[in-house]
Length: 139
Image 1 (cartoon, rainbow, N blue to C red):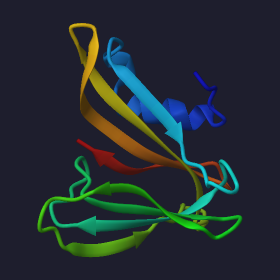
Image 2 (image 1 turned 90 degrees about the vertical axis):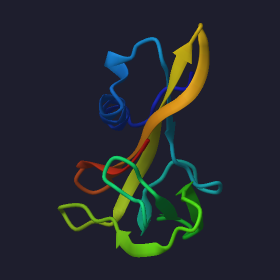
Image 3 (image 1 turned 60 degrees about the vertical axis):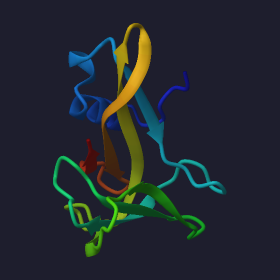
Image 4 (image 1 turned 45 degrees about the horizontal axis):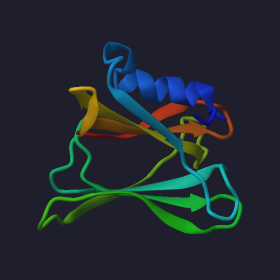
């Protein structure tokens, strides 16, 4: 298992999905990286589509590399027939728009086998002040 470059972000993500409460489940933590630049801060754009809620994200999350400017789709979770409701540009309380981004998914284990996706979270750590935010929850 690869060691996290952002242990406080990983801890925050694992707390949100309740990793300690589900020690037998599989928890997959991944730090977002640019194909060209690696793990760097990103500008985060969140498209909220109908059906979206604070605990069940429906939409798209786009990341723009702060080094090379390349844009990538990070998360896509839409219902059939969905329509865009609004777009959010993530900003920290310090007004920075650049975040290290990661996700943590919980996969339930049944009969000693990873069986199905239960929930996940996308989180960000401000590259200026270090504040950590929840960007989206999926269910």
